[in-house]
Amino acid sequence: MQLLLLGVFTTSLTMSVYYAYIGFYYRERFAGGSWDVILLLIIVFFVIRLVLHYNPENVWFSMTLPPGQPNYSAWLRNSPLFIYGIGAVVVVLYLSWRELGHLQDRLQRLINWCTIGAMCALLFSFAMYALDVFYSHKIPHAYIWIIYTLKTLAYMVAFFLMWLGEFHLGRRLPA
Image 1 (cartoon, one colour):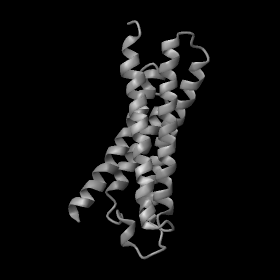
Image 2: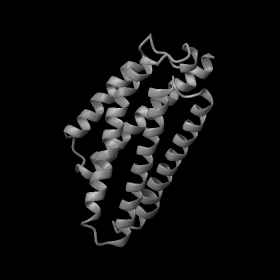
Image 3: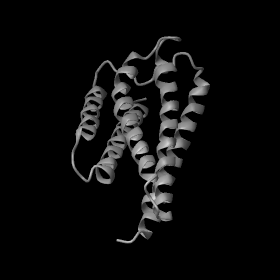
Image 4: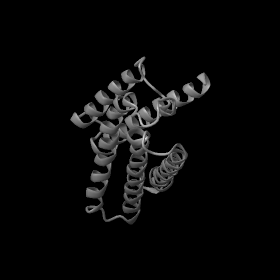
């Protein structure tokens, strides 16, 4: 059980860092490498999320609660992630979409479409994650695994599209 708890805890921390990296992606691609209010908010909520991970009252497995009881510690622990994660994704999505209208180069447009697709996949993953975090007390346990599978598939789509846009196609851009 301790090993399982360590795995859940580590995965949660990994996703926290992942969305902070989306913020750094925003900084490098759209903010000219400078720190601004958007990135500062992402970092502040990221730190709040990290601190909440160490709350001794955390319940990491909703299945250990009585049937029908919401996991309020999960709500508290995940609220900052929803704020900065969705915020970072929406900002990158919006700025990529806005930039798309000004691009003439076919390759650069394709790279932007990859970024837009990746951000849409991440929004879908957040929708699945929200079902788990906020409604796990109402959803039969067998369906939680289906939700996690869909969330994981969305992450895989996002990873592939970002790899395709930034690394595969991005290397073809003139320096």
